[in-house]
Image 1 (cartoon, one colour):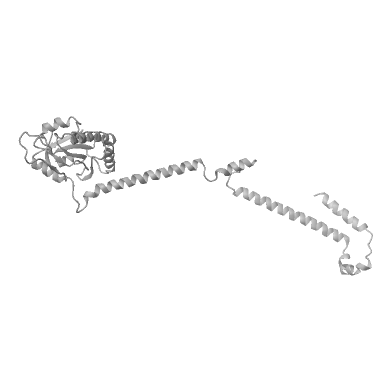
Image 2: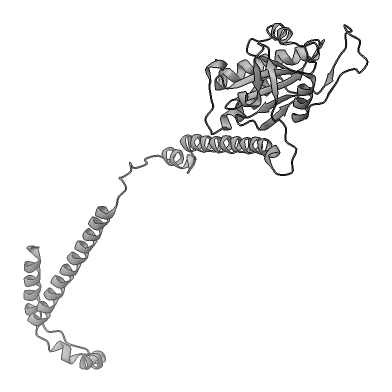
Length: 316
């Protein structure tokens, strides 16, 4: 900046010492037009030139300051951290290759999709079980199960009220059955153990005989002990058994022309009847289910139960 005044002063002295230049005749018209400008003293011209130079420098300095101020404001309002400069084309390609999707995003997407699928699948199965459980609770629908008054294999009176507070798995059969009843009682033993393992001791397995003439309490106790000690046997008079089968919608028949001491078979329905702690029918499980499948169905129904389950000492 110190050299600028000296340059301006030198230019002024050179203008003062310069020899006046004659204007040719051909240019007199142009000179006459600009005669007013030629009459301006050299010092005024030099002063104006210096003034304009100084003003231009001030303008340049002002613009530079405004640019610096704008850059400073951009740095102040920027919330993102400064990235490292990408030096090679390989680095640029590596940054843009993944795009918005990467391994972390893929893992989160798969986990979220799996969780939603599991939740909706469980809810769908739960609603299906609830519809099955409510099928016999509506008005105008046949009711499965009801009151009964029988005798257990220990000779004690046993009624439907003794099953309240726990789930019960009811099977109708007879001790002289050659093949089907033993297979189903083996399945019942496995079902009981698997349900107890998953849900605790909250279900009573019992068999109601369809042949009260031969299935006395003593016979039932000895027969059922071969399958599982938890299975309870019930018997009674013929009329009581017939009424109980009617309550559970169970078909059975005995030959009408049987002589005393003669062996015979009893025809009956082959189902397991799952009853809830309030004595309402839940679901019938047929022979097409394995023990594992049936146990899972029962366990799912038990887990859906929201009310308390009674655990008395007599069932321990």
